[in-house]
Length: 441
Ligand SMILES: Nc1ncnc2c1ncn2[C@@H]1O[C@H](COP(=O)(O)OP(=O)(O)OP(=O)(O)O)[C@@H](O)[C@H]1O
Ligand SMILES: [Mg+2]
Image 1 (spheres, helix red, strand yellow):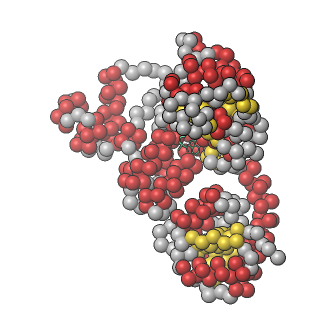
Image 2 (tube, helix red, strand yellow):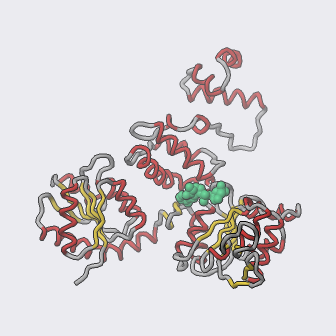
C-alpha cells in the first residue's frame, strides 16, 4: 500500500523531528520537515500539504500561532499537535484554535499512526462542512485578500474569466492590486501551468521593440548570435500581461494591434508567421479614454483590449478590508523582520481605517512594514507615520473653510493629539515653538 499524503512536521527538536519522520516514512507517507514556523510557512507556500504535525512550544513563533494561521489560510489542512505538556487548559486552547487532535510526548509509533490516520480521515468530514463555511464568508481569493463587496465584485469576474482566454482590461489607481488581479486570473484557472509573462509596455526601447515583442533569428542583426523568443512566444499557451499599457508608444500600440488581429508573430529576420495562442491581459492606472482624445492612444487597440473590463477598487472603497490586509502584512513582515507574528492594537486599526490611502494597498503595506521595524512587541498608534496619526478630518459637510479657519482647526487638532505638548506639536507642524505660540495667540 502506498500512502500519497504529504505530511509536514514542525518541531524545533531535531531528534523528535527525525523520529516522527522515520515512523511516518515507514508507513509510506511523504514527509517534509521544518525546524521553525518560518521554515514551515515556506514549505506551505509551495507544497500541497495534507496534514500538519506540530510541536507547541517553540522559540519565536509558537505552534499555537502556526495552527491559528494554518486554520485561517489553509482551512483544509488538518492539524495534529505533539505536545510535552498535556495540560487540560492547553489542550482546550488548541482545540479552540482549530487543531483536530493531539498526542503527548513520549508517544509510541502506534499512537502516532492512529492519530495520523484519524486526523487525515476526520479531514474528509471537516472539508465538507468547511466548504460551506468558506462560501459564506471568504476572506481571500487565492492571494487576493478581502471580504468587502467591492473586492467580491472583482473576484466574481475572475471566476468567470479564469478558464477562458478572453482579453481583459484592468484599470485601477496605483497600488490597488492590478497585477495581483492579472496573476489571479492566470494562476487560479486551468492554464496556470503555462507561462505568465509580464511586459512593461512603457519600458521597451523603440529600437528593440520588434525583437523584444516577437523575437529574432540568429543573424537577424549584428549581435543576434542565436534565435530568441519574443514576449508573445514566451507566453504561448499562457498569459501575456501588458502592464502600463497607457504608457505604450504609438509604435508599440501598432505592433500590438497587429498581433491581436492576426494572432501570429513574425520573428525579426524571417518572413514566416508563427501562430500563437495567448490570453492577453492589459492594465493601466491612467484614463485611456482621455489619451484617445489627445490622440496618444489608438482607439482601435482600446476596443480590441477591452473585451472584458475590470475596475479594481481603491482602498478607500474597501476600508473594511483593512484588518484582513493588515494581518497579512503583519505576518509577512513580522516573520521577515522580527521572526514572529506581531499583533496590532484596535486603536491603530481605527486610525488606519480613517485614512484616505492615496497609494492604496502598496502604501498600507509600506506603513505596516515600517511600523513593524519601529515597534518592539506589537504595533500601536505611535508606530504609524505622523501624517496618518494626525490626519485632518475634513468636515463631512460641504462647507468650505477659509485658510485661517482651517489653520486654526488644524492647530487645535494637533495640540489635542499631542496632549498639549507644544514642542511635539511644533515638530509635527514643522514650525518653531515661537511661531506656534504667536499663532495660538
Ligand atoms: N487584495 C489584495 N490582497 C493582498 N495583497 C494585495 C491585494 N491587492 C494588492 N496587494 C499587494 O499590494 C501591492 C501592490 O499590488 P500590485 O502591484 O498588484 O498593484 P498595481 O495596481 O499593479 O500597482 P501599480 O499601479 O503601482 O503598478 C503588492 O504587494 C500586492 O501583493
Ligand atoms: Mg502594477
